[in-house]
Image (cartoon, rainbow, N blue to C red; front, side, top):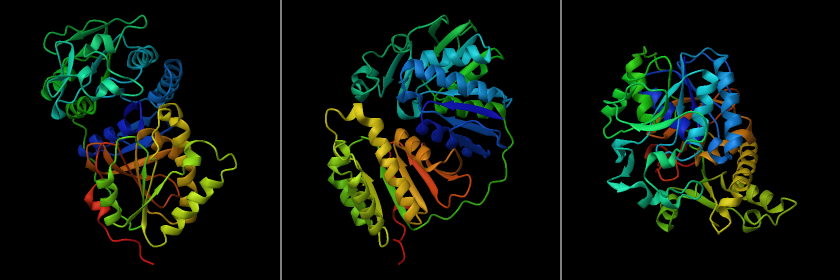
Length: 386
């Protein structure tokens, strides 16, 4: 079994899609447990934590995974190196007992490359791209050694896959083409922890030549669907008009819930009732449309309020397709509903993954990053039957 630690649910789902492409049986869990699968992915939410909290969580998850005796543990990081990358990787190396790590981020297929230790997106320096305004991890430089700074005992340096000599420490790999990932896989030995993007994991699976399993039947897409728009990626009137034309009735978070001026939860109950009544005849889209200057500081509470709403709706309406955008929102909903394990069943596109929750749950979940679009295969199916 190959184990993966992902720093958010979006990354975990993307890795799940890669495993599906290789014909492998894969599970995504929020808490590691023994399972019969080729690939076990643990979806943490460490990118939303501070550095000490993320270190404690990575140490706990790594130790729990080691007790399951995996062949190796891959560390899925953000492709543009957002998050507490150094301290998390150093922690995993310490717990596993490796002396070196290869960190191959980027995504050349999307124009995201690292050359001579500098990060570019479509030839634009990372710090001049939209990631310079990231609310939690703004990029002020494109020098990878300044982004992933040494903050502990393990050295960190940048390197080229051809010239790398297997030195101890963390090497942040140059990745200019997709073929470079395969070169980096070939440069690893048993004392090396592998970390980075989905492209690097894809190259790793190719090198392992794991035997594909017979695929299970994919459940048909149901006609009663709830879309949860949890990310802050902008959605204009064109998007909302499109969703309305496809039969999705839109329900915005009440301003009283957003501003936390609803101590008895009356507006949250009213919001839930409106969604439930609408879903007797239509599909629904729920979203946050109030993004003021404090939105970044109350993001966790907003995700929690969305999760409470979804949980209440699921108890009252037999939803069979739950579509969630935004990794933190996904994590909050899974926690509120009580889902700890999912089986990816279909990759609509990189990062847009349909999953079946393990247990008694009767619906499927599709997750995606905020900037991706939903599959027409899901959106354009008939509306609920009365």
